[in-house]
Amino acid sequence: MEDTLNFQILSNLPSEVIKMAKNNEFLTLLNEPLISKYYDANLRKELKALFTRFNDIKFFYKVNDSYSLKANQIRIDKVNGSSLHPNQILNMVGRKIDEEQFVEVMYYRILNLSIKLTYQEALYFIKYFFSDTTEEEISEILAISRTNLQKIKKSCLVKVYLEVSDLI
Image 1 (cartoon, rainbow, N blue to C red):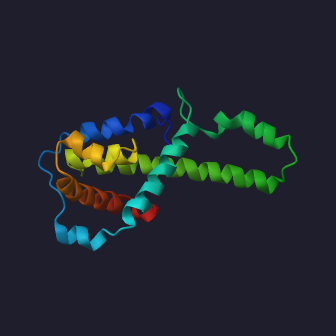
Image 2: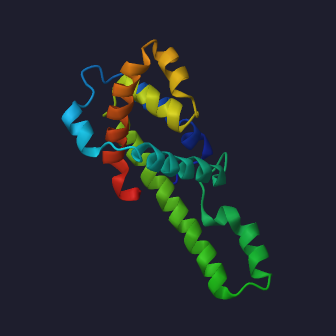
């Protein structure tokens, strides 16, 4: 994992997405035939589960330093002093590495996604996946009807899906 990822950087990711999307003035929503090809009722649930995992794992990162296995040295030392079998320890370390790789991949995918989203899509994306804001509240923030929000939502979710589909 790159040394620069830490809790602050991961926590500021939503702000970065919004800032980058503000520069996307010439982007548009996806057209209805393309949305219909990928959008289904379960898409939002699948994406929500993926982003819940990402949001939860970021809390394992240190606040000031980049996260590494050294950051968990005390925990590993405690495990080594316990009655755990060496295979259990290897499994724990393997899971930690998998989580680190997942967070790194998600971080860069989200940054890449931010240059593909319109400002309204980016706002929906951040408010829904990072703030648990309701659709009614999002439509109020954007000052649009719920009908127009549905178009933005579907376009956004399909763009997100196309960026992270291999991780679901």
